Structures are given as C-alpha cells and as structure tokens.
Amino acid sequence: MKKLLGAALVLFFAVAPALANDKTKLIDELSGYLEFVDYGGGAIFPEQIPRGEYAKMLIIDARDAAQYNKEHIPGAVNIEWRQVLAKSADIPRNKPVLIYCNTGTLSAQAGFALRVSGWENVQILQGGFAEWKAKGGLDANAKAAGAAPKH
Image (cartoon, one colour):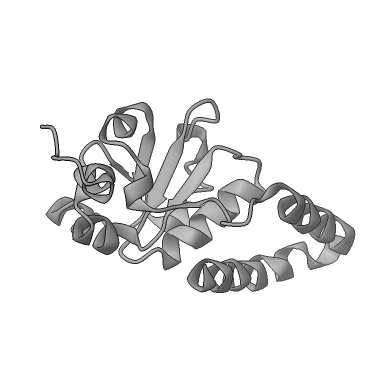
C-alpha cells in the first residue's frame, strides 16, 4: 500500500505543473479521485484472482518491450507505463483491466493516471510480476485456497 501511495504522489507531482494554470481543475480531479478510490487504491493481490478471471480481463504489462518479450502473464499486452494515456483508446472501460510492472511501482503510476482520467475498471497487481510469479502465477488463487491447481 505504501508503494502505491508513493507512486501516486510521484505521479501527482509530475502532472501538477501541467495543470497549475487551472488549479481548480487539478484540485477537482484529485478530490474526485480520492472520493472514488477504495482503500486499496485499486490494488489486487495475485491470490485474489481466480485462474478463469484472467481471460475476462485486459491485462497490461507496463514494463518495457524487452522485459515483456522475455516473459509476461499469458494474454497480456505490452503498453509501457508512460504510454497508457497516449494509448488509452486501446484500453476498454467496459471490462476489467489489470495492469502490472515488475514490482507494482510503475504500474501504480499508470493505474493512477488512468483512474484519474476516468477508468474506473483498472486494478494494479500488487507486488507486480515478481510477486505474481512467487505466489504461483495463474494458480496463485488456488494455492492460497489450498486447492490443487487445475490446468
């Protein structure tokens, strides 16, 4: 949670100068976000995602292309974290969107930008790809529940 909050603050201070000319709009946007966001800031843990849910999501790997090409969550598309707003036309608003990076820091910034921009369906994978792999990947939910993974 501290990582997500820290990433959100970094993003805030990065975009604040661009909106400084319209301070009221900046405050309104951030206030709206703070009223909208739940306690977890849109974060989800790997063990909270049942294997079958991945097929119902747009999964965004927010790392660079080299990392994505080396290994990624099956079905993920690669949109580098800095490009999520530029490529937002490719991100649906009508189905769940899961965004991740290596540890959750950069994807938290990208997720924050999307959520402030109106995407209410975005969740950040807490701990990123590293934690997802460590907890069992697609089978993290089954492992956490003590069930045998089904392939």
